[in-house]
Structure formats: C-alpha cells, structure tokens
Figure 1 (cartoon, rainbow, N blue to C red):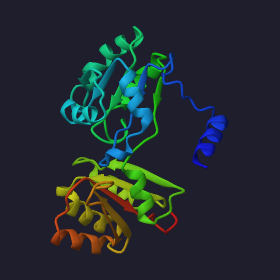
Figure 2 (figure 1 turned 90 degrees about the vertical axis):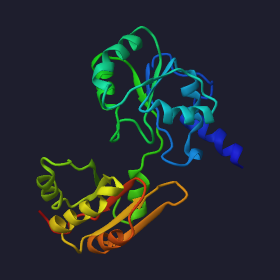
Figure 3 (figure 1 turned 180 degrees about the horizontal axis):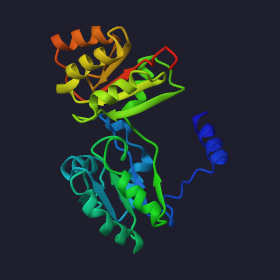
Length: 249
C-alpha cells in the first residue's frame, strides 16, 4: 500500500529521485533538526553530502550533526558576527561554479538565524538558490497552542532595549495570533511586560524543548504562566504564542 502511494506521489509531483542536485542551483538553505535527529530529511542529508562546501553557524555543533549522518563535506563558519565579511567571498565561489549549503545550529537558516544577507545577495547577483522544507520551532509551537493558525504574525526575538516597549504596545493591538522567541532567563521578564501591555488575562502558550525528551507546552493566561515560571525556572529554547486581540482596531 505504501509503495503504491509513493509511486503515485512521484508521478503526480514528478519527484526527483536521480540522486543528484540541480545543476543550476548554487546555494542551498538546508534546515536541520531543532532537537530530534529523526527530523533530518533524506534530501537534506543527500544535498549536504553532494555540495562543495557547508556554511555552518557553529562548526563544532554542526560537526557533531554531520558526523552522525556520515557527512564529510568541508565546513566554514558563517554566523552573525562574520556574515557581512564573508558574503563577497562566498559569492565569488558560487559564481565560479561551487555548490554551497547553508545550515544553522538548529532549524531553518534565515529564521532568527543567519541567512537573509546571503540569500538577498544571491538574488541580486542572479545566483540560483533553494530553501529546503524542514524543521523550524515556531510551526509546531503555533499548532500546539490551539490558537487560530490561518493568520499569524511571527516576530522572532523582541528588541533587547531600544524600541522594546514601543514594539510591545503596537503588538498588543494585533488581531492575528502572535509568535515570539525568547531565551529561558528572560522569559519571566518578558511575560511581565506582556501582562503590562496585553493585559494579564490574554491567553498564551509557552512551548519549550520542542522535539526533545522534555518537550512541554503550557497554556493559560499571561498571569498564570508568569506565576508558574516564577516558581519553576524554565529551561531550553522558548516559543511564546499569544492569542490575537479580539477587539477591532
């Protein structure tokens, strides 16, 4: 039954199964697991094996992942502190015919991780690029929240200092479901600020350690979850999902 379904899918979508990547594509943005290694796709593994170079946010972290899957492609560091300096040299390699993959420590490159600058530069230089579908933390957190998923706003990390309160005030009026990333040591402070600007009765969910052994999603009012995490300090990467403002702007 399953083999028949796969054959049907291949005919319908003209699925590539030749084992080789497109000759035209030069840059691949390749998502990597956010916690569970079983979320690494077969296509991602194949492309990482076939490209000439892998750009990694942290070569030590990515090295462990690549070793696990038997990938020995050369790596080069590419992160927020050096991406501006590296773009031109990477473009030179791409234009000379090299095929390069960009990965982050976890998730999809460009989603609150390096990737945007290089993707934009490739588009400006008419260099073919392709982003593979794959893991990213905010999608399961959004679905787990139970809030409407048909329209939502992904904000990533809030400004650290300048403009933070102004941004929160604007976002408090957003009628669509809102998604934020936060670090565990800042979570309680951020929830307190959400209480202040959104109201303590606004419904939210907080997901942490997604796809990992201690994955957890808590749901309730901002006040309830703030009080919970004041007692029980959170661990792991955090995704906050906030129900939209029911009032019309």
